[in-house]
Image 1 (tube, rainbow over the protein chains, first blue to last red):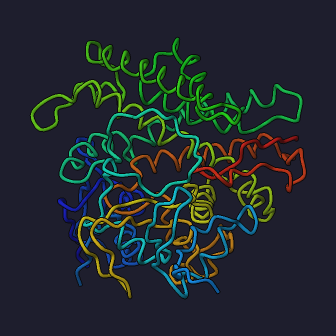
Image 2 (image 1 turned 30 degrees about the vertical axis):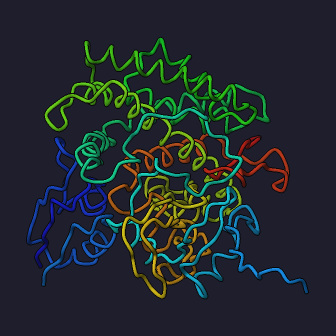
Image 3 (image 1 turned 180 degrees about the vertical axis):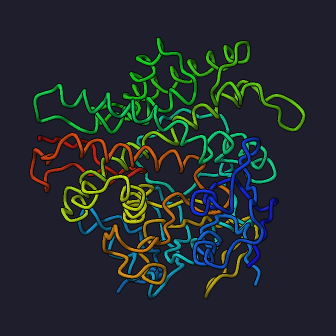
Length: 64
Length: 404
């Protein structure tokens, strides 16, 4: 599956990095999201759906 | 029947809790019958009250709702214990685009990773306060001896308050949070802290340390440094935003776990494996910002069956959203084993609490260390006599006398 992040929407809450650290990190310069893996394994889908839902500014999108 | 014009009076904001652990019962009815409806606040201001989880999330993300409230009095609790001092404008009163680069200055200091690096210091602070409690003969008021000093000392670390100044810093913050403080003393303490913050900011501009205030003091936004007054505002915000909220969340969590023995037993049996999830559920169960988040509409917003007009005040009830059965099954039950559920105690949208990761770790460490040290911790007074902060902006306990 594929994941995309919208850096303009990101407000640096870090909730994605907190919940799925294998896929998301935070920049130490801006606090904004860093996508570590744009094609994470399908097994992470439930965690990623949770992270996308939890994001306070809807900056995460799951594709296929 | 007189010849008077019939007024349709707006209902007052529901504020009466059925018990200390549940929000006002009216919220459940409103979620069903009138999820977004007009109410009048204790200070006479009218506002839309938003009660459903999905609507609260949608509106807190809506760019047509502004946090800028300097123009006219917002809906508020009439006899609040405010400082009466006009704090310099800070992050929570700014909208994008002004808000955006300034928020980044905060969130980069409060990332998940940075907080984890701070965790050993938080543990040391909590352990020394647990020792303080243990040195007394019971009963001890946990609020004053444990819950309030934790965030205060952690903020001192974060802001780079020199060790020799921390006693004074604590003294002022105790007055600001104190139960017995009158408005005059609170104002004095607030002004003293602002003066202190001003000196600290100026000192850090000359001699930056490894702390948030130093980095804010030497940062550039829109091509230039932040003014001293804005830095004082940021320093005060970091102090105030993370202090009363965290202290009360710790106190509420302690009494809630003491009142739910199976949950407490699970936490004691496996603190490392249970603490994070337990605290997340406690955050859902208790929204300490008990009367919701206030916004002002800058454009018309059609939502559900209503039309919010430009200029209307809108209050999003975090407590009601957290108990909405549409977002979380059996939402009125405390269940620390439930699959991760949605909660909005830290808000939603671009203003979501910048310190939330710090708050989570503080509460997790406070609870695990306290309950590990005192296996027989219990209230020293009957539950019904505990003074819950039913009228305050931030819910919690004024005192929590305990014995062990």
